[in-house]
Length: 217
Image (cartoon, rainbow, N blue to C red; front, side):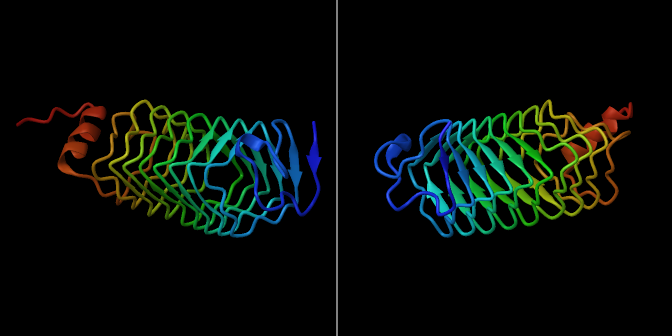
């Protein structure tokens, strides 16, 4: 396993991690300053990034496959049509980060800061956000099938038009969250906290039926 020291990758990362300054699969990158770096089209495989600064970085079509982000700063970064598949985010800071039409299937977040996170579209199925603090985040039109949101805190969050079918939401705090148009078939109103949540009429029926209420037309 190769390791990059602070300073990280010089300009011109080669596609797929090849070429001068490239990040080879299985490498470890520590303390690199990639502030405002454009990573469009770059491919990282099984790379471990430790304490890397990706503040205000941006990319279209970047790919991170099986990567680990430890203590990485994603503050105010913007990712468009990029993939973070099977990745692990540990103690990462995603304050005000934005993901537009991105794929994060099978990724896991542990002890991460997610304030003001914005997600527009994309596929976040099978993502693990157990006990994550998602208060105030904005997620619209994304697929989050079978995501693990057990004990997640989403008070005041906007979760609109999101496919949450099969998701684990036991003990989730959805108080004051805006949930219009999202699939709430996996929400058990006996275990989730829903006080003040904003739902549409069809969702109200779904939640009532989950309590055994017979809704007459």
